[in-house]
Length: 126
Image (cartoon, rainbow, N blue to C red; front, side):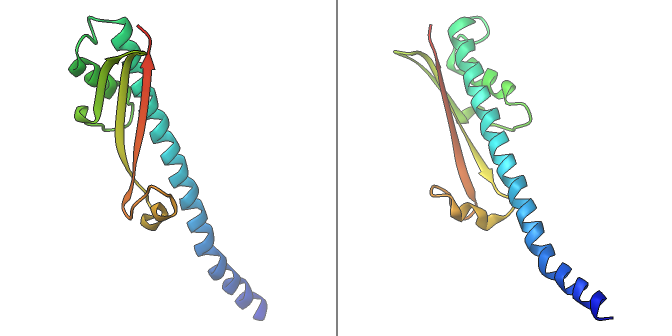
């Protein structure tokens, strides 16, 4: 009887820690995926703005193209800015990210209680 009781006690002590650990891994994976997708959208839009004047001739078209390249993310076109600068066509994108574990953001230097804002920028030469 004592063996079964000790196994249940050990399980009850380890389970919350294991669930928290797995949720942290999932949150970090979601964060990396969101940043990579945001960066891909900015990079693709900068290239489109430099190469294809028909599809991406104006800043609004570049923003629309960037939104279409952010597969799986819902980004507002207003979060995308573009400009023609010395390096070529520069595109900057922002996206807010909310963690599954709300207090996890407090451990990130730029994070608040709710989450963080991701920034991605790319410049493609003309």
